[in-house]
Length: 222
Image (cartoon, rainbow, N blue to C red; front, side):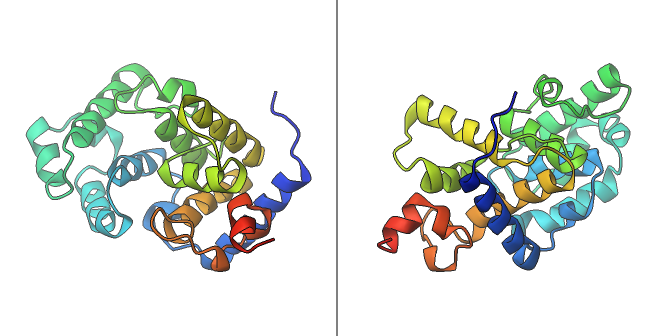
């Protein structure tokens, strides 16, 4: 059972969501709830900048419009379309995943994160991202950007395995129960980490949740 949200959690969620609705980027994978399209985007975005992924995303889906098309493709063909994105193991895993979905799940990408994690190339983050972005499940999706935001906002001293566990626990409390609010919140916190609360520059003055952020409050002398 999820713990009850505190006033601080609710305020953080509300301020972040309001900011995202005004400033969130219009990215192609944010216009769809198609599980396959969401899956492709998540694999492409691993270790690759958004600006670079956009062109490849459309090209890949044009060549392999469904999970069945991808599952039935030759290994070399998949790598050819992926060429230029690098990290070819992602393409290999995505191809193997498509084949597993067709063989084990009748061509339907699972909605449950625990089932998704049994598929090739799917870790805890990717499972949570697919569950929330394709199926609007109330799942945390903690990538590098999200972990940075939560650490700075709630657990500035969190380190190591114990620190990662605290970050995931807080992420679970932050995500709204389900539906579009869960989708919006997870997109919003990723957007904040990618554009405002970045690794190299912390733009606390532009941050919509600085009042509820321990690092931001300290920087402002509050």
